[in-house]
Length: 392
Ligand code: SAH
Image (cartoon, rainbow, N blue to C red; front, side, top):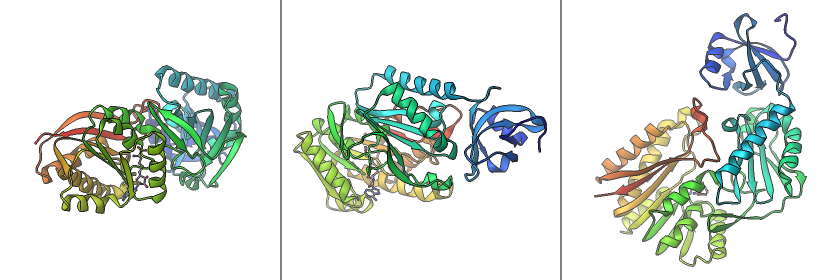
């Protein structure tokens, strides 16, 4: 027991204090010395000799025991959460995004750990990914209603991350009404989004600006690999003569086809295939493309998976470079935060060496600006997007 402090509190080791000083909001179980708290409490964090460090979200299940929310002396209250939500909304407003779907709250990147809020037109989709955020959710929903006045709010609380917190996986309307299908726009493209069942919260919002950037270089025959609902294919299509989109999921192919028709893009074709097999087949058949997009799912979900993930990235980049015409453009992405930018650049270089071609780096990009990266927290910089040109 630590006298002189009222629970809930958690005492951390000197190493834990160091991490917080270094700007990282997470403290792992191995750096926790004493816990006087319940699951999901907002706790005072004390260092050795009971030195107050700040306040954090406490989890009794996750390896990430504490997520710092303030470094001050005052206990976080409703005004703090409201202020952070307001700041997050004001920043999105300032970005003047040419889209009706975007991320309003990006967890740690908006100093609201493990909370995601995405906007799809007049509806919001929220995710609470830790015990404390889950407990705070009703209060946060009330604030979002007051600040935004949406038609409805859906809690997409089905990510696997919730299992690590001992939380249930469920999807439910927490305010108003949310239809099965919402219509949103991104630049000139209109999509039908299924917020209930679509991947993530419905769309891959983090690629919006990379789609815009890629459109500046696209031309000729386009191959969009790992296409999902055709985000890249549809944005690049107006600049290309012919567009082929591939995804392993039949359901995704249906979405691409419907979205292509909705945007009157008759030259977009989609079919279901495994990209790994399909790139080899296309190469073998002598097919060639002027623009190729590679946007695979995260190959490295944890550190142990990194070597295998690098082999996967190398394989698809090597095949794509072989399929690319000289002067062609490769847009290649990785959303595994365990594979950092330097590793990704190295593996793409190795692919170019094996494909025996010269490649220049035209743009080095990341997730959209509505998904802010917190300095000192590499986990928040997860999406890498390289725009490359095959010069010879
Ligand atoms: N490019 C998309 C997002 C891609 S998400 C966008 O801009 O919105 C990754 C997609 O890859 C998912 O739709 C998934 O179904 C698909 N996928 C996963 N493994 C695959 C494989 N081996 N071959 C083809 N598609 C795959």
